[in-house]
Amino acid sequence: MNKNRQFLYFLISGGFAATLNILSRIIFSNFVCYEVAIILAYIVGITSAFLIMRNFVFDGERDDVRGQAIRFIFVNILAIIQTLIASIYMNNFFIQSYPLFNHAALVAHIIGVLVPVITSFFAHKWYTFRKNI
Image (cartoon, rainbow, N blue to C red; front, side, top):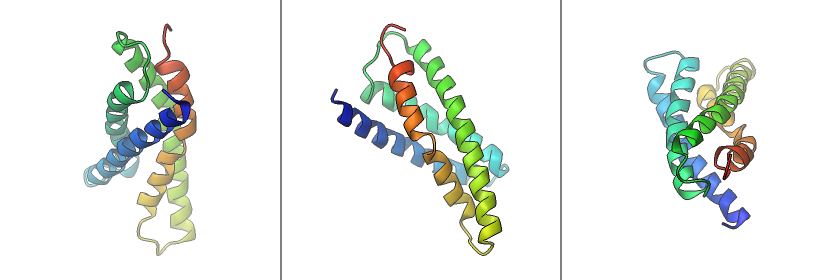
């Protein structure tokens, strides 16, 4: 697949998974604290991302579903750390800097989800879905 097209498909797939992530975080926030909601939402996001990216973005070894899933989870553990730190930092920044801003948690979470996009693309391309690992 063309490299530019692959990155575009990655962005579209990731955008869809990120949308599921953010929407599920909003729902989870009704039941658990913000930090736990981010983690639960991330699980929703990475599950959908794995299925979409494995089937439509990366054409790595097709028989190694278990290995790819394990590597995908590992890469996303690193990404969730980036997301969590950025989301919490930005949420605190908005609350302190703009106390009347009503959507601090939502905007902070969106920023947090965007932070690991580039690192995740290359990690999945060269590690998760690489042929013959």
